[in-house]
Length: 297
Ligand code: GLY
Image 1 (cartoon, rainbow, N blue to C red):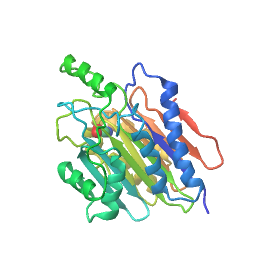
Image 2 (cartoon, rainbow, N blue to C red):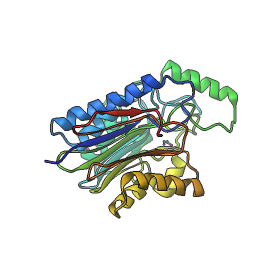
Image 3 (cartoon, rainbow, N blue to C red):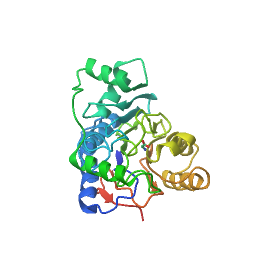
Image 4 (cartoon, helix red, strand yellow):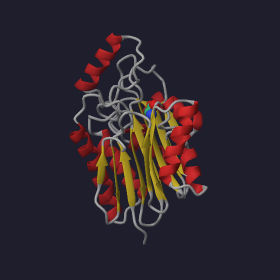
């Protein structure tokens, strides 16, 4: 049996005027959720879903309950899961009325012949699978932020006043890798807009060599298929940290670096990088204490 490793992020962004301690507690708790699975010999897939579930239910993060709202003031949620050992993946996009989109994404992977379901079709699938589709993920805080940003009108500020997206990557004791990512997307996005998170290879990817969850302005990740690019770099021999650092340099020079990444390799090495002011994250390797940070450096 090998040794497990896990990393989670709570979203790259500005995170202005936020309680850093409370947010780091949130990402550390998500690692604890994954650790409980991995310590018991559970799969990387179960571990990343457990971590993301926890962050979707924590209204401080932009995913599930508390997600950022679109131009119309509605929550349209994106999520994905991917299993590295067999390249199976599933995702949902612009999904409404569901508490935990990551669970529906997993069900798309396991109970449908498809990889990605969007909008009303995704919601009908969730309902057919027994999920409550009348859940309201909109919190008072998300509504307040939306009202303030709507009044401000067009602005040059970053799209998200706090963070963007949650994600988890894990290596289990059998040497298998998985990734899961979930988001409300960018605040004031056009209805129907789909970001990188549910797109395999853009915001979420796992292979036999590495697993990656991306965060930041999805339009950037989609242009470079950033999550797969990072897994490919690890497959080609790069260590996760320099791989993530150098991809951010490439992004800064080409499409923009409003982005962040977590990745873990098949040898349990972790890479964490962001081009934004902050990206709360936490990681742990078997036998070592959990590490939680509000930003890198
Ligand atoms: N990275 C999340 C999004 O752009 O939707």
